Image (cartoon, rainbow, N blue to C red; front, side, top):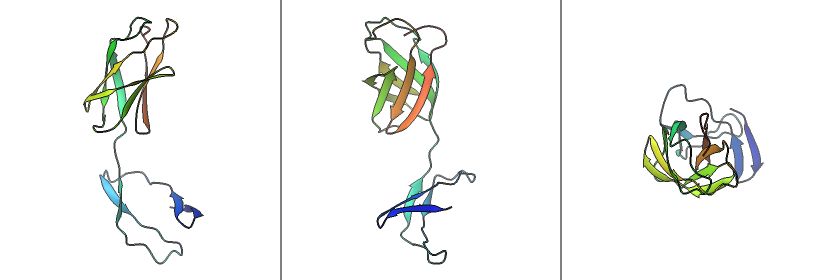
Length: 132
């Protein structure tokens, strides 16, 4: 894959698709198409998380409703942020298929987007049945 060199200590590479379904591989770099690095720097693939449901799907505008977020491939050991529209709260990892959030106060009733973020990866769910 082509690489974009930024400076003497930084370059950007595009990661190829994981068609072999491997967990990790090593990054090797060549600047002259002949001499490759052999530093064995690992690169880890992961399955993106996906939100499938929330319970309850509504709550009062005063907030403080415990919301269980259900899905796939949630990752333990990372800082979790629950974002109700643009209002952020801390989330708690329960299992690879469950995260707990507490809704914040919200200025108006209505449907809001719920986004879960942990260390840079986002998953989103919008309530289709009732407002939070």
